[in-house]
Length: 400
Image (cartoon, rainbow, N blue to C red; front, side):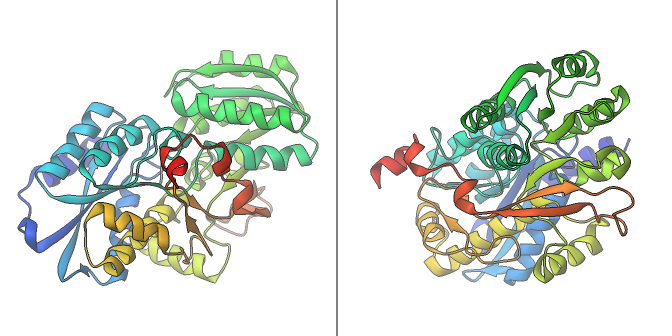
């Protein structure tokens, strides 16, 4: 019922007449999953993060009011591209943010490239966004399959986890993450004993988990996300995988997943994150303001949406124009220094290069209260969690 009401409300907002004429306002769209398996990944709280960035910036840009639009793409590329096309061609939207779901993000980034508009991907994982499908106006901010799989795998391998079994979502994101993980494990002296692919948004992981269990692999890598990650971890607990000596490594874990699971089931999980709300004073200050509005702490996707939107606004102000191609070049020139990233750098391929953090989920006894879920094991330097440009297939890299 809640999702139905939300969808109706969003549809009404989307179809309502816009309050300002095209020349009086600069519009930013937040396009993501607001009702499906990734709705906790970013969802309506990513819209809040974008609005916070606009408010903190001052609410105006180049003498014009800034307006934030939002829509639910329902994890369907046709809905996403239809929405993006209307935003670009009719509503004069200059930039689209979040774009959870890799297939959606790739489609919308391609459309934006044709129109010289900017995309700020925070929620999707695919390295294709800044690799073979890179765009001069497309940016990938928070994480990707390389960062999540390579960063996490190296940490686990250093800790002695050499034998792996991979449980992967059966679409582009899962396939890419599984491939990156396999490459890293093998290159660092480990073995992948098997892999099974599961349908997206499945409710029954029994047969897949039994294969993982029978493999006897010490590490079970979960190359999935959203409710698929939550459900696979819950059912792994029911099957006793951890109790029998196997270790779960979640490659696309966000803090809302841990909140949904509870520490009794999530304890001991190892993952890589781009942001943790309790890391330092700056991250805590943003989290406090965010929680006042949403009644929850931000995850890395929401934090990435804020950071990317703020960087776009700063770049447009510095460039003195909202022209996408000009602003994109200015975004590459300016460093990123905020609560999300220190000394972040926007590369020629559009990837925002920044440090990440290897974390382990606390046990109930270790947690001091709500949302106190992570122990930061180590900081992973940016150059270790970002695909080297020497390996890039991005045409922008070849031209530079």
